Length: 265
Image (cartoon, rainbow, N blue to C red; front, side):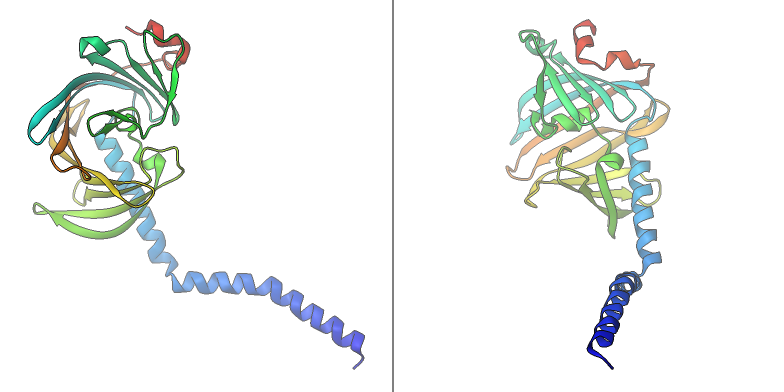
């Protein structure tokens, strides 16, 4: 066999290998990972997070008033009241109602872009969803609560909490613009109600935890009306969010613009 013929055969064999090996390797990886089980787990996680989102807030446009009381070692440190106007999962306005000194401050979220408007400043100022709003509450905790859209979920186990079987979910942020890098989320297996959550920084450090409590009917569905957020870094620092009311409301798209902020009553 001539050298040129051997070289051509070697080249063709190598080319065939380069075309076949990736497919073979991918098939092997799929087999090792048990594709059916993996797909089922992923689908279960996606469904659980989406259903819990629907329980927390309506899919339709809505309005809700939230009282936030923050305390440290049992002593009240701050108390604020907000009005949230939300159109779907992408557009939100958060208006400060109390204290009177901060009345008129308004957050506007479009997608994952967030601005604050203040009566004393002529132009809105860009903010991060992760920045602290008050106590243990970040801007994104009120302005954007779309776990299904912001995180890639997977089921990592099951636990029983207060006699209630729950799915334990690991939520990884789709990008760095969301409020938290990672969330560990417990959702009831029986009715998809959110039970508790832990919020983590990009470094993996636990920042705070949240309990979803006092479920009652609001805006046509039984929802959590009390959230208890506890600082994981400073024991005894707690913020309690109480949802006083919630109602489905027609909110036109034109409301959710920086130009419109001054017109909101």
